[in-house]
Length: 73
Ligand SMILES: [Zn+2]
Figure 1 (cartoon, rainbow, N blue to C red):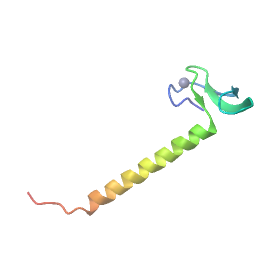
Figure 2 (figure 1 turned 90 degrees about the vertical axis):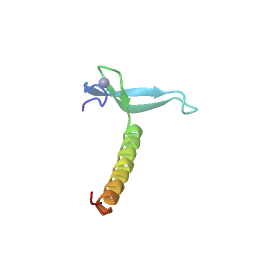
Figure 3 (figure 1 turned 45 degrees about the vertical axis):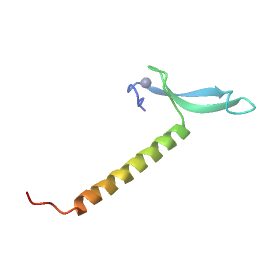
Figure 4 (figure 1 turned 45 degrees about the horizontal axis):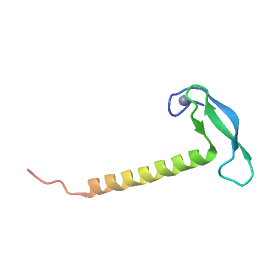
């Protein structure tokens, strides 16, 4: 898999999350060996939701544009 920021190589890494929980929790994520970008499944989920919303807005905008009558000059 390639990094979404720099297209570098992503590797599986185990990260220690010490801020979001009362006990230290290990999580598995992808880390870019070039820029250090970290991606986990939750980040992928949020990106997918954002892309889906953007596609829905675009489809709605295009449907309205197609439905509009063309004005003669
Ligand atoms: Zn990167």
